[in-house]
Length: 446
Image (tube, one colour):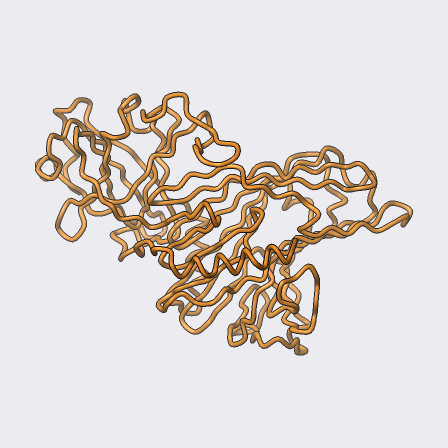
């Protein structure tokens, strides 16, 4: 299997050089958040339900002009995004028309200044009606505005921030490319202020070890003991969403653990991977001790640094050899940063309250080129980074949620990760207003 994976990774790398790169995210308007998106449900758009999607546009006042900005409408059935492509496609009961549960998606970085009625009408030929979407950043109090407009031929842009090659399961943006094999990441290259670099990823590492009651046996699991399947996807100019299924069978003791279905979303400068785990019984009924680790084995990041809660100032130097400081490093935490000169990759994990309350959660770091932990394509850890949970045997039967986020930080300066973490902890506030009829007008500028 791993020989096949190696061949596929090589194929992806070759294809990556030929894939057309989407446009980078430009300078932000008033809302300086480059790692977030805005979801507006149709029911918030005040009587725009049943509007044909082809009659909708989104504009913002940027650089003194009212211009179209990239957006997409993700149609949904209930809370499930309709994905028309894949082995298990899902559809919408009324495709091509805004339903109350559909989502209009754009980036807050693209929001602009407020627009008055006359300027909006002059910019949108045949304007029938509009909705003002105000985005407020509670951290600094800034306000940004975007306008959802309805017209027979609404303004449109061909700008796209993301692209998806379904044949190779490859997501591309101007800042990174990520390829998957059997629904798990196997290729990750970045281009932060320079041409696309080499593949940094040897593979995802999902490891668990459990000792049965009475010390009867110890069970070991790796990522290849689970089934990971890509089942559907949807690609737009703002984000690509992939749906995958993940299941584990504990052979010999008859336990099936369903990690459920994950909808991973890819944006210009970040990846959002929510997940869940359903335990039909408490593992403590069978196991005395369980630990689990999820991380990534990286390829030769010599010259980079590792920064996390508890590391010395400046972080740990990645060189393929564990020194005394690195061997002594141990910390609980839910984030770490990989830093190389003026570029950085921030990784965070968020746990549901029932999961965070039940288990201690720590950071994994191993910088040892001689440490093999097969199955690997490239032996050694330079480094292996991730998160580890201990005491999982204490979990009661329940469903647990978590999400993993990867942020690309171009033009990095020490401490930038604190700003992104603060933004994640302080969501944007989104308010929608608009005319009661097509003859209405936006509120007066503030």
